[in-house]
Image (cartoon, rainbow, N blue to C red; front, top):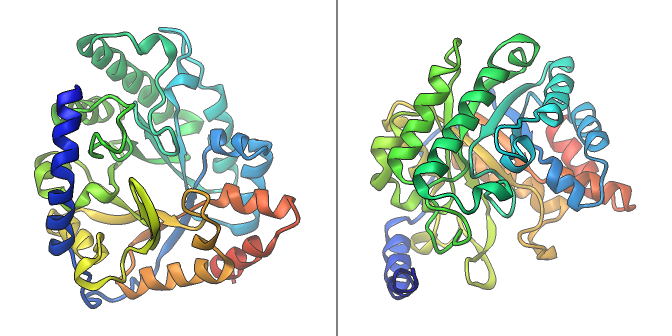
Length: 336
């Protein structure tokens, strides 16, 4: 393991240089979609970390902004705290509230899920060998998909997200288990087998989309490809803020090429995380003005069929703390 980490660290400068030279942002090559559907991701765990009542926050966000859609996580440690003892009551409440408002849900399933620490294994999973781990993970997906595919919950669920950014380089998620391509493909098969309505399946990618050709075969098994969009960020090892889409040939991300890659595979293209909160608590990375600037920048690159804002929980926390400027700016942008 130590040797692998050393090799990764030695190779990282070369990887970064090659990626930067290969991914310069070009001029917009696609028109803005006539109808962009707007949504948000919501994490009860993140809302709690901000000191919020997550149910109150969820209702306030949906009622204020009238989002078309929301992305919700099924965190494994909350859903199966003891082996074989499933508890879906938390997620059931959020699905019912979304359905009551006519908001469609993308349900994110798997070992990896959105928001730090990015993977959410129950304690009893940590000491399992890879074979047993994979068996338990596939069982979770089978049980959860069967539970939420039909009935009143099925009215809200429109698509399944299988894992979250599963191909992130090990350096960036070194505390998480690596998910091999064949396991991810088996996860997709399990979800399809347990959904009689064959809802679309989403695979999501972050910065590692630069190496997208390595996972082309797995991506072909999905219906929708979702990416993140963070116009102001730091590199994984820190440093100053970088305007990731405005460095010309040195831009580490290229939303146009990412969309073209998805469309060349015949997949719908979504932005599942559009930066709308500070990057790693760097205050100057977000403001009411930058929120609009980020959205306009995404549209100038051709946009996406669907865009999920990232940070609505933070908006609500700011509002409750007496700093409602970002809440007001978001409402003007989303529901003018």
